[in-house]
Length: 226
Image 1 (tube, rainbow, N blue to C red):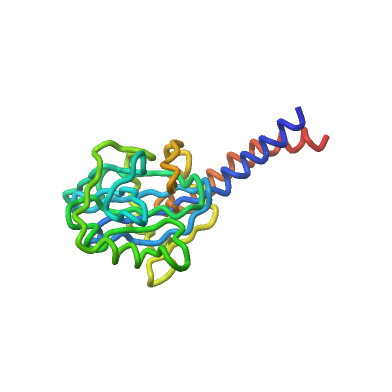
Image 2: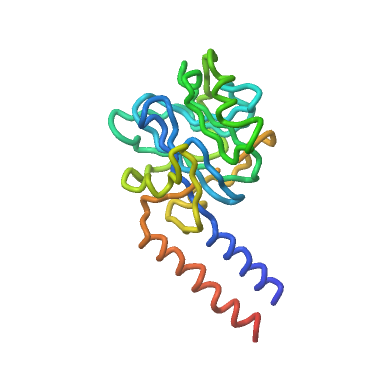
């Protein structure tokens, strides 16, 4: 029984540490902002779509602008103005690099791509974008490896997700209301499956979420140490 309590404590601690990252698709032309995300296993990435009928589609480094079988894919999501009513949310299942691009014709070739956990050298985002030049681009219509859910507008909090002029992003544990519980738990392709910080929920939402694991942890801890 105490072993179960200890496992429960560990599971709740993992949930509390999960972070969420926001990525904006097409707000500033053919780009994702940020275009580099450093995420841990269990973290979540929410992609917010601006006008342009964009997608967030996974490829391999070696085949830019081409979807991989059973890879992460939002399908095309359009907006008449501002952020679309839906956002695409997916979870990071491992720390392998995840190369994402826009499947709209010509967008990937123009450099519209982002990478989760890119290597420091070799298969970098810059190398991917260079290899994408001249590619047409495409995306499956079926959503996979994540879910389309009601958008939580993050316009006012973009600065908290972007940590440098290069467009990279990191996050600390937040327990955002748009966190990992909102993302699909489906596993993406083994060749690079994968998931960022939900700023729009605000510090008050994060604080309220943090009370849940604490309320559950207290009786478990008391039993374990009794």
